[in-house]
Length: 396
Image (cartoon, rainbow, N blue to C red):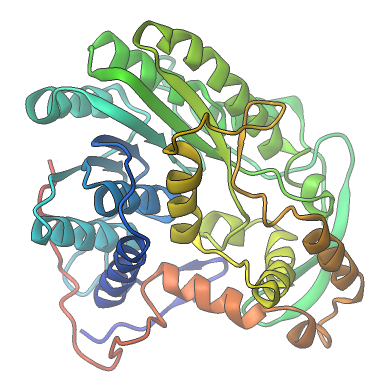
């Protein structure tokens, strides 16, 4: 079938298998172009099908020749109905890994569940023995707790005060004010339950108990801080409270890993276009202005550039891993540079519907958003018929 992007609000209802495949190939070629990393050899990526998780799997496999197991929760295709983009990304990754002679298997299911944890451990025992890196990169808005059975839903709200600021509809380019009412305690608790560190710690507990973590094993989860412009709705809001919990959990996990001389880290990454960030008010406008500024300075990065730099310049160097005063790896260092933030703050004041096309990079934002779903990728003929029913080889 001929597949076109079909939008509903902040999501795209369709995805393109050939576009997703080319996008994965482009990321692989970038990693290979940067040379080999003396990095991990047996890697588990939890949340492996899109964004930073996919980039982590690609960097491990094609930067370090690592064997990888990917865990994700994606919608399979049906005849005349496309899969979720993560399904096509994973199919493309598996295909490229096979061609390169790399071990790669995947599990599609709810990573919060005991069933998927146990299935993953069984696969590690059977095929890899022990793993030396665990990447935790889940971005689900909902979590059913495996012990209590309670389903928690995260919310995006400020804490304490009503928040009003500018935002942009990236489809239309219209800049307007948005007001968000503050959260209550239940909102905060639910968001921490979904996006905090509890499930990350549960994964590590299960892996430790099963004795499938190698000596000196490392685990990394991803976080975001951002500037003062977004902190009321992000870092000082409900999501920020969850990120605080995630970052505190890293210290608890590190204590548990002392017996194998392992360590847990949180990497604070750059603001990027993702399905999740597109739904956060204020963020699309901020990213549009940030992209323009960073591209002009020659320091713009996408997911794969960020993660390749994280692996090659932070996680796997001969020196100690550099962290900030809170023990976090700061790969958002270029975004948070003083000159970058000063320029973005100045642009923010002048950003309107009329001025944004000149002040910001809304076109770059739209392009990156479409790329997430396999659309707008150079070299793909979108007028051609493609087979939407794609299988993932190595799916367990």
